[in-house]
Image 1 (cartoon, rainbow, N blue to C red):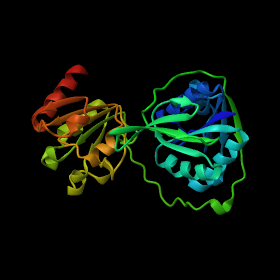
Image 2 (cartoon, rainbow, N blue to C red):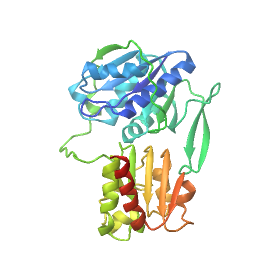
Image 3 (tube, rainbow, N blue to C red):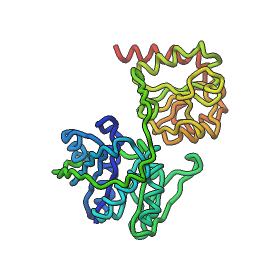
Image 4 (cartoon, rainbow, N blue to C red):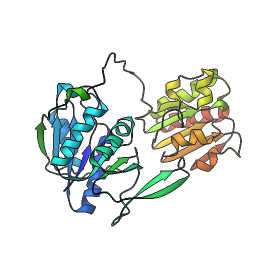
Length: 322
């Protein structure tokens, strides 16, 4: 029996979230008194793979197959399912991002496994196997009982601390057969964004709403984000008005993010917006309306005109960084 964790890589490199997954898997494995096997698909150097061992993986299965060079949910599901059977995995852990959301349900059907999505804590108990997850756009929580022999969990980003548990990981190269009929995805073009912090990867996000009043008022917000090494975001009305690009739209119908710090400037806090940012560890709200719903979700709040508060924040950050 083992705990299997799929660790996604980006151009051969693991991001912080991959190490969060392994840290979480190690925590579950300790509860079950078993070991962690990490699976990596794609071309990743051995030095990079070995980093997974720093967080508790005792075995790392590396799959470098040209047929799997492009992510395809069906073929990836097939490969991960095959490995889970070989490793006798009782728990499979995957990220709760777009990749995980494409793979996890398929794995659940293929392995007849119960699925817990968006988990943010270690299991509350093993008998019965009970996990914790936030629900209703982060306004409530649920205790989910999974009774199947195999459990699949998708971990919410930034919900589990990195825990270094060095292990002498064994790296095993595997080249499983891939059913060509499953390969449906064709990569036609790649356009990479450079010189900007990606919203979904950012630890800090500075976001603006209609309280910014005009697209011409954005420079102080962008400057604050630059000083903090943060990504910029916006509410849906702002992107709909064309003030900011749609790729920055966060909320129920936009990007779902979970940074360590989310600074909401001139955002009222509609339910749809909070659904996309409620998993943030800390929310700082700046709004001239003291009754704005965003203050109910925020740990810290500033009641004031964003046009007056933002320049002062920028100056304060510059002073600290001197």
